[in-house]
Length: 506
Image (cartoon, rainbow, N blue to C red; front, top):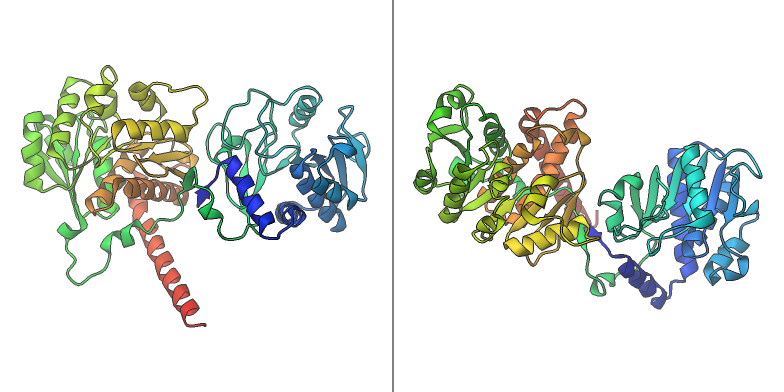
C-alpha cells in the first residue's frame, strides 16, 4: 500500500476536482468515514468536536452532523471566525444546526455535559508550524482530562511527513485518514500519538498514480515467493535453498541456533551451523535437523561456504565483538554470496565503519536496531525521519538496510522503501532479531532479491509474534512460522479462486 507525502495528497484532491468531483463531496465522504468509525467503536456518548478553519474542520463538522442525526449529543467548538472559513467548510457549517461555541475561554464543560469523546478536526497533515497560545491551552486541557480523542486525518500538532514541529499535539485513540496513509501514521515517535489508524476511500479517481510517487510502501501480506516453491513434483531440499549460519563461542551459541532454526522453518531446505571448535559440542547437543560444520577462523570461511554450496549466510548473532568477527565478516563478503549481517557483525565495525561499508555488495542485507545503526552511520541530518535515514544508509552502502523498530524500514538503492508495522510489542525480547535474520536468509537462499526478502521476512516475523501474543520468547518464534506460511498459502488459494470467479463472471 502506497504511503504519500502531504503535498501529494493535495495533488490527489485536485485530480478529483479536475475530474468533476466537488470538494464538498470529498468532505462528506471523509466526515461520514469518521462518524462510521466512531459508531463502530463506541456507544452513544457526549461528543465535543474541535473544528478548525480549513477543510479538516469541515470534515469534523460533517461527522458532527451525522452523529447528531444518529442521536448522539454533540457540541462543536469553532476555532475560527465564520467569515474566515473556506467556502467548503462554510457549507459544512451551514448544515450544522446543533450547539456552536467559540474557542475562548478553555472550558470543556462550558455548554453541556462533560465530553466523553473528542473529535479533533483542527488541522490536517499540512500544518507546518507549532501550535501555541489558546490552541495549546485546549490541547493541554484535553490531555489532562484523559478523554479519548478521534483525530481526522492526523492528530493536530503533528506534521504529515513525520517532521518534528516542537509544539504540543493531541494524542489520539483513533485516527481516521483518507485515500492513503502518510508517514506520520507509521513512523515513531509520531505514530504512537495516532492510536489505531484506519484509512478510508473517499472517491479519489484512478490516475493519481501517474501524478505522484509514493514516499514508501506499507508491507502487507507477502507472497513470500509462492511460499518458498511449496509445490512441484521435482522439488527437493537443495532446490529450496541452502543457508549457513555462523556461531559464536561455546558460551554464546544460542543466538546462531535461533537464526538457523528460523531459516529452516521459514522454508530453507538445508541449514548448516558453522561453529568454532569450542562450540561444536554444545551446538551438537542442541541440533537435530540443522547440520553442523566446523569453522575455526576467517581463513576457513570461503572453503566452508563453497563446500556447503551455501546460497546465503548469516553472520553476527552473538558472534562476538572485535577483530575476530571483523575478519569473519570480511571473509564472508569475499565469498560473494547473499549475506545477512546483524548484531556483532555490525558493532565490530563501529570504530571504522568504512572498512565494512567499502566491502559491501548488492546481495547484502544489514539488520541494525537503532543503536547499531547510529554506531555505523551516526545520527544523520537534523529532522530526518527513519525512512530517510534508512534510505541514505542503503545508498551509502549499496545494499539493503533493514532498520528495526516498532516500524521496521527496509531500504535499498534505487527502490522505494517499505515500512512494516505488522508486528507485536512482544518482539522486544532477546533473540527476536536473530530469528528475523534467519528468515531473511531463507528468502535470499530461495532466490529472492534482498529488498523482497527483507520486507517479506519483517512481515512474517511480525505475524508469528502476533499469533503467539503476550509472553512470547524468541525460542517460540521459529515454531510459529509454519502456521504463518500456511496462512499465506491459504491467502494465495483464496485470491486465485476470487480471480477465477471474477474472470468467469460468477
